[in-house]
Length: 333
Ligand code: NAD
Image (cartoon, rainbow, N blue to C red; front, side, top):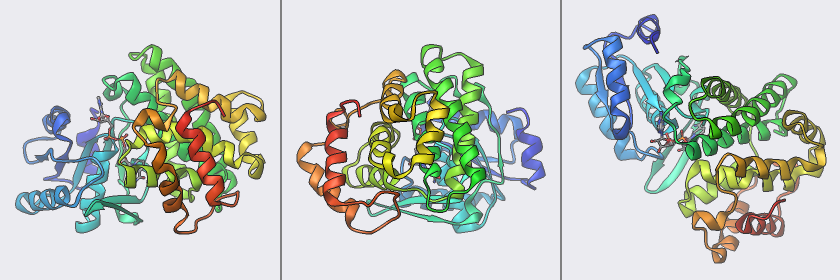
């Protein structure tokens, strides 16, 4: 983090706003201590970036005449900085403290009237990202695990993306390998800085993959379950990943081979190995454990089918309902 002043100056920031969530204001204060008093702090970032948090941040930026954004925290905080960049054109510098990977993408997401809207715009992608593994030492093991599996899901779906390419496939395989090695280790040893470093590298690579190619059924279903049923973001990714890979396994053989190499298991075992990994890192493995009602699965399948999208295997109502039913129960795929 000691490089933040030099990097901020490189971006031409004289009076940047430092964005954090209310619970991580101390991190924002640390940044302010490093870059000087001309900066200001806005610690009102809120999960899923509701429009009132954006309005409050924009008012702050205008009153303080901020000339750049520095965001420090998880992807909730990065998300608010992206919303500010989208509205004002201000550049941003991100210091991520989870493994979600959003700092490497031009994808923004905001919640308007309870509905999450997303889009792509190169102006929102942070110009500089500082990865400091020491800042992730305070992440509780369960949050580390779910957040890391969230990153892994980007890399997994990039391997069978409609617009996949050989470079992103290499990046994705390396990301899965790094996360699969580091996440169980840092769950057992939260202070293991080498494992934290490797997990951030995995997240960085996953973010590059997510920002470059399109996603498929896994991200679609997680969006539905998070948006329409208010299930927690990273935890939904953790539950769904093994089942979505099982759904696609016979329709994306090269992708499954790459996952098998990264996980160091036979290709036939990939969905089961992902399920074991999720359990090993302390993340949830069943939708029912997140509070999803079995009676809502049909409605979720209906929403997921409402608008067509790319997936290597045809997406049918019966197929999705079966996938959701297995994920609800949480048995090993
Ligand atoms: P988050 O920022 O809400 O962080 C998750 C939890 O970790 C929170 O409770 C937070 O307080 C805690 N936390 C963060 N840093 C910590 C630290 N250093 N020590 C202790 N606790 C810490 O969420 P997230 O998991 O980082 O990201 C999820 C959000 O990001 C979702 O809204 C999702 O839609 C979005 N996302 C966007 C993209 C994109 O490209 N646009 C990609 C991935 C995720």
